[in-house]
Length: 121
Image (tube, rainbow, N blue to C red; front, side, top):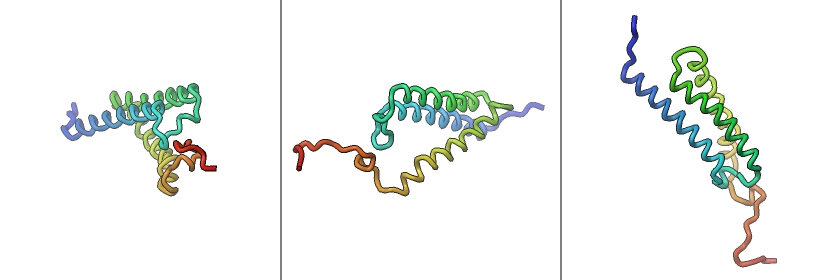
């Protein structure tokens, strides 16, 4: 018996593809584009940034490919396991500390900005 997908299933699948692609693009962009205080790229070497880009790109790219082709097996289960763990890690590592502390300032990160008026000492 051939099962035909409904319009709702197709729309949900297209939404999953779009969200997976957006997540991959967002993570890759925020790994390379300095957006202080959300990412402190000055602390990391080019090698560390490249490794993070490659590692996250591989994991998230695998998720995107699985969503694109996934019908059964690995390509069905990988996104169902990976994305909840990614969300949990993001919440623990970034969002919970962000909402529990004061607004990020350069001083909070040990960065002092030079005064345009000179030293006040």
